[in-house]
Image 1 (cartoon, helix red, strand yellow):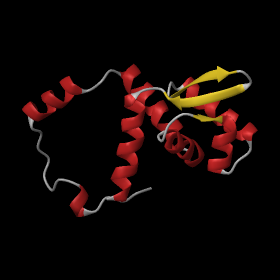
Image 2 (tube, rainbow, N blue to C red; image 1 turned 90 degrees about the vertical axis):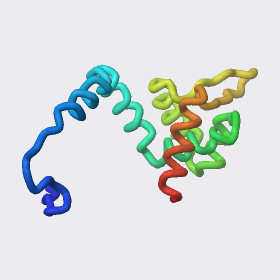
Image 3 (cartoon, rainbow, N blue to C red; image 1 turned 180 degrees about the horizontal axis):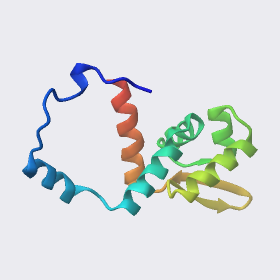
Image 4 (cartoon, rainbow, N blue to C red; image 1 turned 90 degrees about the horizontal axis):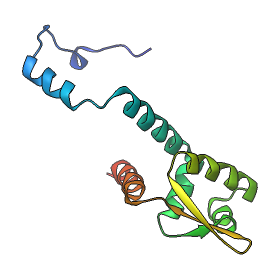
Length: 120
């Protein structure tokens, strides 16, 4: 449990109706919040974030991803299934090789922004 210090809370109770209304109007619906939360949980796993970061450089096959991240191909495939289920990556097959890439620019921006933020 996190205790609140004096700096974390208002010293008096006051509500700013215009600001509250503006925030409520901008608030996404519950389904959207739940889906976004699930997506961020998927990205929050260190192994999955490393896979996404590797894919941020371009398309890679499962074997390449295994070599980059340092886990088994089976473990990579398992994580990629999860990332695919959250619509973060997509794939294509070329013969017996499966290549993965980030789904779209939103995912690229999400990964880039998260990493840029922690580097600052």
